Image (cartoon, rainbow, N blue to C red):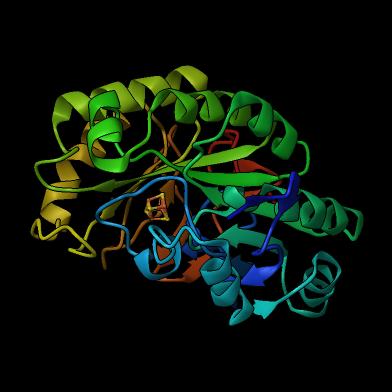
Length: 303
Ligand code: SF4
């Protein structure tokens, strides 16, 4: 994504977007941040992890191994160029709550995100980051200054899995969660891959870790489908259901994802329906002014 060209930094992918779409915010997924709204979502190229099951491998991994600056610049040249000013103005023109930086890993374009998010904030837009959280503490602190909400992928609670399968490490991701939980609205996603990260023990460790930050942080457990280099059979709702129950022992809001079942938000105190979701259809009728209509329990939903 970046080169040293005769001693000066070169960013051939600055502003080169792989996708731009107005998505339901639930697609990020964010369930407790402006539920039912839409958000202009920008996609990028490249990633700092190498997940062999990446669902977006064409845009995240395409340039791995093509280290020559010329070939990367040539590839970047085929993508639409959208300056930070332009993206903010598109966000303002769209029926959008803000801008989401998503699809492949946005933080490998740190300079672009930092500049765009600062401009978006000044223009009254919210900034949403969908990331693997695999950056240094310093980078995390800096970018969180201009981000309002994030969904961070925790691929597994095993450092060995991160090293062996993803060519990364878990510790920076956990650091990112800690920084984000203290600063912004945070949700977490784990793609459940049968036989790889789906043990009850691992789910207990992950949910306990998140609960120690804040037991109101929503956790999304998503169904995996075979993709890229993985041919492990797809996970089903039957794989997710027991893990959702395990995680609910520690966390108040745990949702199954990539499945056709409803993913509703219930009041953890009285069980009343707060937000009804089917697909991307959302009805938020069970709470008002941040409180459950039935029992007055505080509902941790922003917007
Ligand atoms: S972190 Fe996300 S975008 Fe990057 S390789 Fe893994 S799944 Fe793909």
